[in-house]
Each structure stands twice: as structure tokens, then as C-alpha cells.
Length: 301
Image (cartoon, rainbow, N blue to C red; front, side, top):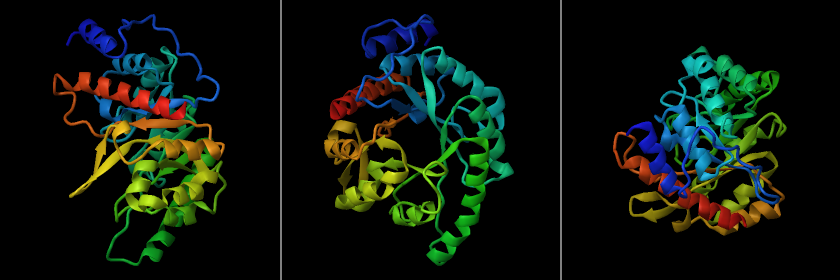
């Protein structure tokens, strides 16, 4: 689509207002409501200006930005392209609340120091690590011991730079932290100001079913960001669905609030099919995201 047509279409979908360069900065979150970000993985490929237009008009406070291979910004081009993304967001009153990286050790291959120093210079406060994974043919304790020095070096560099590394729990037998306890043992060695959790309630429930409140209690003192997404069970396993339609519910919000957690929180929209090459995908992505955000705000009210 031409830019003008695309913007008018997106605006209609999210409330009827016409988007434009004069769009005002969003007002701060209302008292009692945490800052809400959008993980924009499902919008990778949009030009930065268009991405910022959509996110602002939807009403988010910021984004969790994939800065990794295949993301909004390729790590090798972070010094050139990340400032452009940040500038486009700032013009609309938005910021990057979490940078999603491909980093889980200090290594030239992931451009670790360049990515983290650039992010810090641009005012980004935290980043998500890439996952550590298990080799099922080797002893688990041995592999956890091998992770410790990698994590120690990465935490030390992050502390020096002044940016907070965060680890997401992700379901799956190969993933360290899927069951929470293994990564929690490693994280126990550090204060929450040096290493924290980006807690994913969907993956915690997939792995722990009814024990997710225990996992939430375990991570709470190191909780930097809470993720929201949902799923249902089917014969093949778990299946991502819109936020209002799955296993996860308002009880998660109630426990977060009763623990004193005030955010930030982040919405993930991971059930959509196709991509931007489909001419109808963007409209559906905007519509689905708006619906999930309304559910999240209702849960937090």
C-alpha cells in the first residue's frame, strides 16, 4: 500500500483517528496502571516510522524490540539502525522498554559489547538474553556449571555498562529455565539489580500447570518485567490464542498486584498466521493486538 492509504487503514482499525506526523506523545500511565509495552516480533519488517505510528495509535507506552538476527535491527548494524528506531519511537512519545537480543555470553559473534553499549547510550534500561539450552546426552548439573562463568562475565559487562540483563522462562525440555528452578539457582547468586526475570506466564503454565503461583513467588524478588500471552491445550500440545480465550486469566494479575508489582508489563501476540507479505496480515495484526490490549487493561483495572 502507499503510505497514506496504509496509515488511514490502520487508524480506522484502532479507533478511527487519522495518524500523522503531528501525533502527540502518549500521556503517562494512569495511577495504578503499569506501563504496557508491545513485543513487536509480529510486526518485524515494517519501516520504523510506520511501526511507531501503529504502536502509538494503539495506545502502548513502548515496545519490546527484537534486536537480533531477523529482528527490527540486525546486531551488526546496531550503531546505524537502532538510533533510527529509537528516534521514530520518541517522536510519538514511545520508548524501548526491553531490547530482545541474541546474547547469552560475551562473544564477538553476537556483537555483545556493541549492542549493549549502543542500547545504553540510547537510554534503554534492560535487555532480554537468548536462552541457554541443554544437551540431553550430557549431565544436567555439569551443563549448569558450564553456564555459570558465561553468565558471570555477561553480568559483569552489563553492570559496567549500566544495563540490566533479563531471562525469559520458555517451555520445552531443551530450555534452561523452562521449569524455573534451574535458572533460579543460577540467578540466586546475583542481586535483582544485576540479573532479573522477564516472567512468561504462558510458558510457566505450560510447564507447571497449576504450580505457576509457586514459580511466580520464586521469581518475584528478581522480577523486572511480566509478559502476557495465552494458550489452550490440544492433542498436539499447547496452542497460542488471543489473551481473552485461554488458560491464563485475571488471577495472574491479582497475584502480581497483591505482591506489589507495578510493572512494566509486556503484551505478546504470537498466535497470528502468515506475515507482512500477505496483504491482509497487517490489518489482522492491528485488530488482534488492539483486542488483546483491551483485555489486558480490563484485567488490570
